[in-house]
Length: 96
Length: 491
Image 1 (cartoon, rainbow over the protein chains, first blue to last red):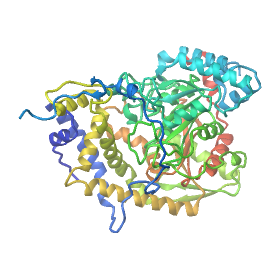
Image 2: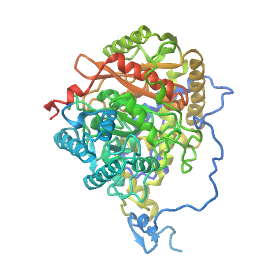
Image 3: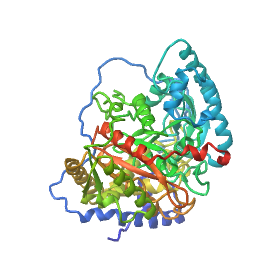
Image 4: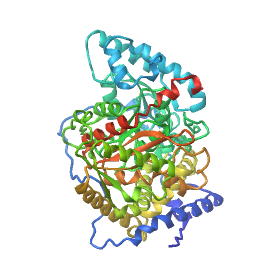
């Protein structure tokens, strides 16, 4: 089954800034893989439930007790940019 | 054995307790071997000489004080560089995590430290464990110790090469579609993927969460059992961790295979398998039969679709998991006009081609309009695969196949063709899809002198019967890789 990918849209969704040449290369490679992967559509699966996890478990609880958490200074020391106890990022909102 | 670096884990464990040598001496021998081999192999990304030296001294003090923390006390261990280690650089072989020093130890790592293991350093992998050759590393490929012009397999290729060459006594890797077993096969050692959930994934940098599992790479089956015992068991920090007790793997190791039913999987033998590999596998099956096992052919028809389903499920999960690498909290950051541009620039520069490709594949497979035809259908096929395994285990106690359709292939052969690379995992992916345990045991060499791996699969929590059969396969094969590496040819 031929697969037609809007690769620029997919790259935008995935937050990957790729140029036109890269987009074209990935489009071709992804289409080859997806054409192989699309073979799963040949298998009849009416009434078959999906498996999201091999050993089904729901709601794994732990005891509600206070435990140690990560050291704030150690965590923040890895930040590309920080301001005191905050991670610093570029502007999120446009200027009003 | 003249060089301590060539000991098995069991031999080292005995020697340390008998005070024939110290942990410091053992570490020195393994470091000497690394000094001889690393220039050619590049198994390690980071060697933590100071940390290892301190751990070895501590282990020797413990032995002197009569403290016994288990089979890895004082033993040099290498960790795949996707297992987070507090304060020790952890990169996943990616530029996006260059320089990252995690603020915590993963659970498996903590258990190793608590067990007195000497953590030597971090081994090379395909970036974020995505690959089958350890060529997709931002820090350069690892080579196969049997032939440096060939790949060691992957993605745990650094761990496999280190154990094969003697620059680690035991190593740990992760297996999402064969990443422990396939490199073990290609490097002539044992690789064990436990039942999903048996080893905590807390602190394993996630690739595909419903498939990922940590496991050991060792020289002997009994060593893999010991190495699994140290890290296995329930962990409240991983909600998918198996809550029951760790089974007794060890008791059956000497029991042989008499009376066991060994299923030969039709879909994973014969077609598409290199003749030399299939011959070695057939020979092993004949030996198992002569040793008292009943051989039964079994068919799992849906396995024909396992690879296709895997290459939808794994990229889908990867695209979600790798969303966390956004230039905010750790790792690389590339500037942009706004936060979205910063993230897009960071990710485009930080991820290599294979990771980028899988993120794109997964994003597509999960996107509106395609979700049900791709990801949803793959999940239903996964159910059919699990049902096929359940039916097969009605007829057989274990299932067997080659681990990899080929022996180690030449460096560069498959890098330009992703699909041909993906096909090298065709025999290992099914056990990840079902969550069942599987092990690769070396059984011989092909005409070019390259190792061949034999895979034994078992139902969930079937490790005891799996290692029982694996130990017999090992005895019957009489294969000893150390003969190759005990010599100076290693350089």
